[in-house]
Amino acid sequence: MLRYAVAVASISLTSCQAVSTAPPRMQRVDGRAIIGNATLEALVNKDAAACIRKANKAPLPANTIRANGAVGGDAADQITARRSEAVKSIYLGCMAERGYVTPPA
Image (cartoon, rainbow, N blue to C red; front, side, top):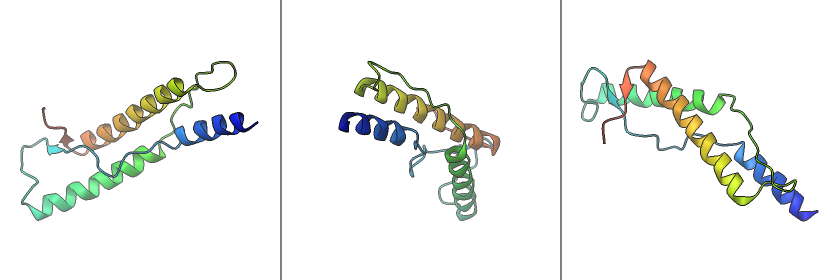
């Protein structure tokens, strides 16, 4: 019984995936420097907060991979990774709509 409770708890926790409080660094599409410009820093912080809220509220599919009736550790990790990428994609799309891109590596 305890094993099933742990499986249910792990599924519940994976469904609560959210954008971390440290989103990726962004730069403006128009090339204006954000750092050192208080107005643009405030604007990017406001836009990032709005996009984090949007990403956290987005409905994500609740995919589950079952092995013998319970979610295995590797399967739960895969689910968490996929959901995390989906949330990040929503965040980056929102920021792109507002005129930001991730800097090239």
